[in-house]
Image (tube, rainbow over all chains, first blue to last red; front, side, top):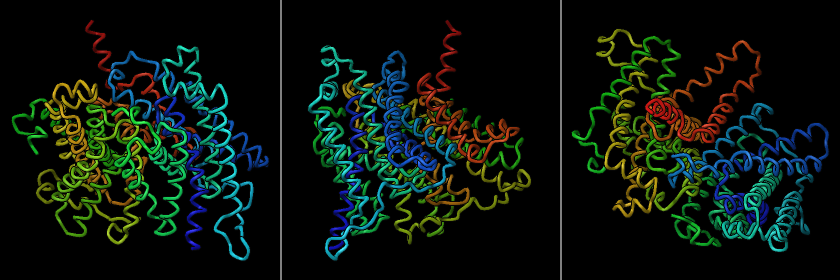
Length: 303
Length: 337
């Protein structure tokens, strides 16, 4: 009973972070048709910025805000400086080939990942360091029994739910959100209705950068910070996005929570070392059973 | 097997054999000028070249992107090490068996990959790159965990020492690897000029058109995964026998380094693969030579090669997606007109 509660609570807390990562991936995929493998590299970099600020005696919250802003900025820069010129150029012979048009942005994002990791290594010496949370991870007790959840976990869940609420309002109630949904659905028609699709796309990159930066800030108090720590988060986020459906925002969030429960149940009932293999098997299983994802639409996946 | 791979003797082109032999001779001649350190580096180039060639086939010829070639190298490395350590099989035989083990792995991977495209395939292979080394830690009893297996090329056989005089350990590891590199080159050159290679390029450029011309797309994809995995597995076995087969020898970064080498040199060119491999292996040395006079801190020194490789990768993709080999070709065309 106690281990079941542990698995459920820690699955919820972790799953909410995975949901953010997968949301970031899906936002960019829907807008630009690119899976951004540099996403958690960007988050790693902005978390280092926050860590540096905290070391220099700034408050946690000012570092928090700066890291989020830096995440958005970095996302926007990647689009404007790299992805937009890459996708707008059609004259190259290599890009005439179908499969290479898909491969080039992936390779480019890996280049960014490599550069960000190397830069973090140069600036911050690349050693593993701790990263604080705003609240101490004190276990919360209910009556006399200790629940397997800390006050920090509650903070994480609260922040993520607030973010998801804001995102939902943005996409359903604002004109900009409507424009984003429209341009994901049909860029040509959206462009004809007078919406600047390329800027909507950039906005997607900015929101994605901010969301993944937030995920970085929330996961590192648990895992410590080093140039490579967030790699695992990227592959979990990717798996979550595929499970939920790369084309669906709600699916991304759902997939994040599913992955959270899968991983926490595996590490509670089996062993933490099995997590990698569990992720791989779960991904293959999901691709085999429902390749378009739980909430994804089928015709968008071009095979 | 030979029917599908087009490796029948009559198909093995004269040009490719000559090229393979020439490169072989070039490396031998080069190594004679070198000290032990550069001989080791040259051996590294020859091993990694085989893995980079697997990307030339996979991404360059057939358009499938894999971020997990390092994991397949691990499959080959562990296969060979287990055969030698646990079963006491002869090392050379173990290398050839490692090719089959990784080809078999590639068959399964290809069956899964034939259903996937672009980003799905890239992500899945990236997950694989992280998951496979962790299997070695998980099943510690069998794969001996983080410690791994200590394996090496042993001592040079007597007849060879009698033939060419005394051979150092560094020279021996180079001589042991080079025949495999030459074979891999010949195989890749033949494959890309064969019917199979042409069908891969057709699938890469336009799947619908390829299917309409009677190419079985899934089979074509499975085939390229088998061939590429065989190459990567061989490279992994050779790479491991430098001294250690362990998870730390085949990190995720290795997969990305291989991709970087292939892209910088030119994804569609074998000469490009050779050039790119030289760049990734020798870049740290070059940087050290240039910055030798300057006082740079240790953290910059260790991360500068990765930074420059990342920048080179980005610049290649933005300015010249066909890589160094592509720009050479471009120059040649301009001269003609």
